[in-house]
Length: 127
Image 1: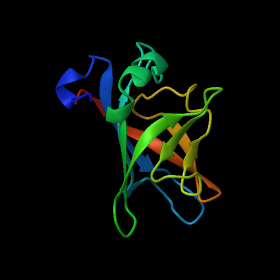
Image 2: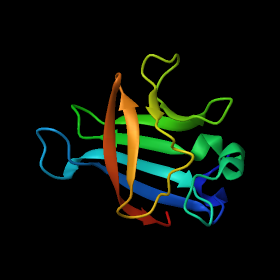
Image 3: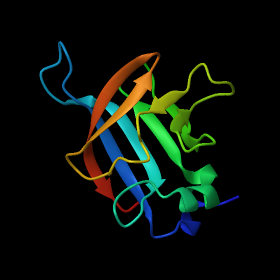
Image 4: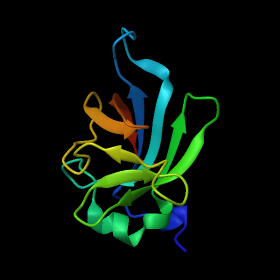
């Protein structure tokens, strides 16, 4: 099993905050995700490093009744998603997540319970 001390230099802590939506005039700093993921030099997810360290690629969703802890996963064909429990009923699918750049100020979309939400990258830093 890989530990945090075994992480490659590609790993970053990324904070996503819920972006402006209908009924929400601005970014919501109380709702979002914390990700521990490997990024390539162009700030995109690094599939090769992810594959080596799948068990370390964690996701914490915050802002609802209680935080949820999951893992970043990748389906055959390359679609990224957040996996919380066995089965697919609670998975949150990333919209073109492999193409997105994890750079402060950029936007990332995730489908949660059948509804797409947009998040702004608030911070990217070394763990």
